[in-house]
Image (tube, rainbow, N blue to C red):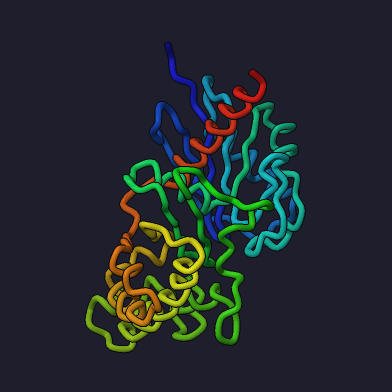
Length: 287
């Protein structure tokens, strides 16, 4: 029996990753810039164009992760921090009308965390995405946890110092405080530049504070880091562990695992798996 496929999308504040999922794997993908300043209908039309380029004859659905809170049942996106026009967008309805395919929408970091959990041996997993902002996803006892309004994990919006964790635990930290993007500073740090090394030490200190919040609330077995800044994991992880030494419960730190994601397609795979989980649940309810 021929396997069907799902168009899967990971939408961020600066780029979009569109792939085709079949038989548990991503068989093709395309990453390109995304203009977060587009108006609602312009951005939806852009998504439709990417879907049409990707879908094939056996495509049966679309699963998309977006950087915002979501009414998962209705597929309505609310208050996207990094896409200004997306304050209340009926994304599922709009895309289903324009593509004639069922659409599933969830938070992008939930999708990432679900994809990472699928290759882990842990029941309690937290995914932290360090990109345009800071987001978290929670798998508790092998089930994705989104909260009542899909707001669980909006760690970047937590007040911290003179701003929020978004300002200190994402790529924004480097441009705001050191005048260069994280990728350029990482290259300089790897060449021995002391200022660049200091930037990542400070970043690690702030990330340790964010992780401390997660530990006190969720107490996971493992935290997996993804997003563009996580590529520089080796430059900041020692600073993270150093500043976690002050955590009030040492046994928690002793048992904690923090790793950089080793998967290439976690968010895309997770989006597909969350869609498949939702259809299975619906079938069980209907039965």
